[in-house]
Length: 260
Image (cartoon, rainbow, N blue to C red; front, side, top):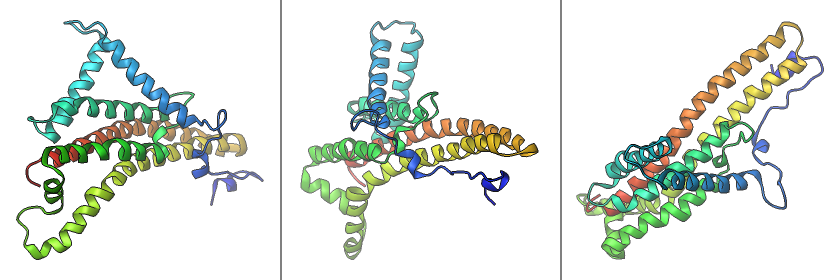
């Protein structure tokens, strides 16, 4: 029994995929396009402001920037890439984490209320145009194309006949699937979380306006669940930014490693 059964003559229009395709603001420019630019501006401005006048005893902005930088450097880049080669990649890891985090948090920011990366094109672009070229490029630069392909496709220690199966699988994973799975993780989490919020918020609104008698009180429960899910979604948004950054560093570490 759907929500429409709770109200006389009213029908609940459940949110779906169509709610993620917003009409253009002007010309062909959509809200997610504006958000992706706004996120870049926010991240750049934040780090510029935080580092313009560095102090021995940091202020709030400097402390926040240093914390994010140290987190990206020590917890992600150093652990995944290795202490010998991680330093050149710290800016990339920190920038990716910060940029993805801001775009995710847009989903719970008042007025905006839309996670940019719930559109698959944005995480896919980051994966295919930034992460994918970087980790293959650094591996090829270090080892040369032939040795790099050998390391990626022919892990040492396997019997020769096994390579007939293993090499195509390794190629499929490392050269085809990795960039797509990297993008899909964050996309699915943002899409599903936002859709769940829409169900509870719009469902609560429907019950308040259309249901009768005691059923109106159910709208309160719906909105309470929406608030609880918002806190859960905020945690997921941070985790997904972290996962994207960790996997990026892991791919770079794998490309640079002597053995796989």
